[in-house]
Amino acid sequence: MTFKKILNSKYPLILAPMAGVSSLPFRIISREFGAQYAFLEMIHARSLSYESKQTMELLRTNEIDRPLGLQFLSKEEDFIKSALERLNEYKYKYDVLDFNAACPVRKISSRGEGAGLLQSPRKLKKLLKVIVKESPVPVSVKIRLGWDNTDSACDIALQAEDAGIDVLFVHGKTKVQGYRGEVDYGAIGRIKKRLKIPVIASGNILNAGRAKQMFDETGCEGLLVARGALGNPWIFKEISTYLEKGILLERPAIDEIADAMQRHFDLSLECFGDKRGVIRFRKFYVWYTKGVTGIRPLREEVMRITAKEAMNKVIEKFRFKKISH
Ligand SMILES: Cc1cc2nc3c(=O)[nH]c(=O)nc-3n(C[C@H](O)[C@H](O)[C@H](O)COP(=O)(O)O)c2cc1C
Image 1 (cartoon, rainbow, N blue to C red):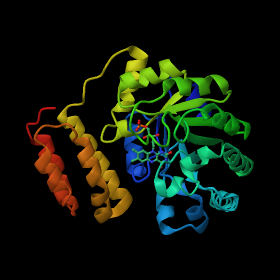
Image 2: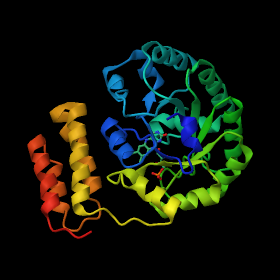
Image 3: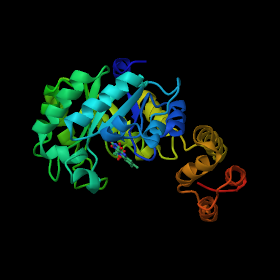
Image 4: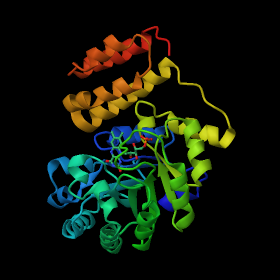
């Protein structure tokens, strides 16, 4: 399915780019539960042009991991150009090229990358023009509403549209807000009204009700689901069932959660090998068991586990523990 087709679906639901989280196993499990699109973990253009081992691992994908967005970050035209050359040469499989102008991490934004670009919409436009010119696939940008206020949110979005991008992703908070506080639905709605290209909204999509609120109050064309999907891939089905039929699904039973955890863990071993597969799965175990009464000792045990047999055991312990949730 192409990105255009997804945007034609009534309620496009996309797994958001999340550095350190949206790896291949997590993308596959999210897709199995209804994510229509997913993003690779963010990559710096400089690493793309050098093709470091770590970067090559981030680019790992397979035939079921489609359609797929590749998000990258930079503030330098030269690195952008050479990164795109490399991507074109090696024919990595991805369907949309997304440029990050949203990352609030100080190390990044203070040097004028990520959310740092929100302070110079003209520079953002210039970089986007280069990407649009060189990219073989549709181009998008992910922005926030501004640095510390939303006054220039529409200007930033319009400059991006003017550069020729195909889709705009907007996280409805400022850089200074980080991940805290409320989403400014009004500001996203104003952007949506001014732009001709599709607008996909992000921010606090933590359950079906929040998803409906985002569609209703902003008129956006689709949603990015981020923290709400951590240890909770069911959120995609929950949102689409609610939006399409008005039915609120119940939380999955313990057995269902344990099955998803086991599947996710097996994918993690397959993707990263036994040792790293275990370590990279630990945080997901913690997320899958969020809010479960009496889970603390198991969660503490998980953080010390290094062997796959031990991880399999704690998943089974969770399944057979009489836990209320
Ligand atoms: C752990 C984590 C990592 C993230 N990494 C990225 C990233 O690399 N690129 C990006 O554009 N957004 C990133 N985000 C932001 C999300 O894509 C999303 O816009 C944000 O979390 C708001 O959605 P939410 O409130 O539903 O979580 C990250 C968020 C989290 C929680």
